[in-house]
Length: 66
Image 1 (cartoon, helix red, strand yellow):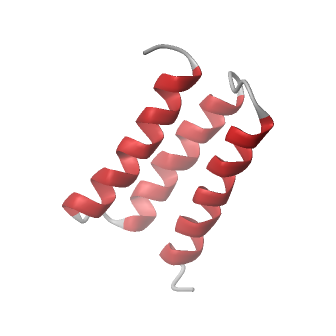
Image 2 (image 1 turned 60 degrees about the horizontal axis):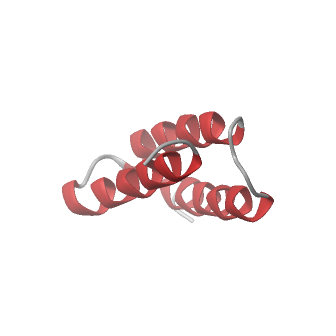
């Protein structure tokens, strides 16, 4: 897979890594945000970008204890 699909797959792979290995959530959020920023530059649709941003917000709030 290349392009947008590969980026999205990588983002969700990172989320799976957090769930499976107990990677520190704040560390994972930083990595996820970097991936989203890279993906934003190549994103095909607004809805995909919106979904990724919602995911980042959810994990950022979780990392902050909310």
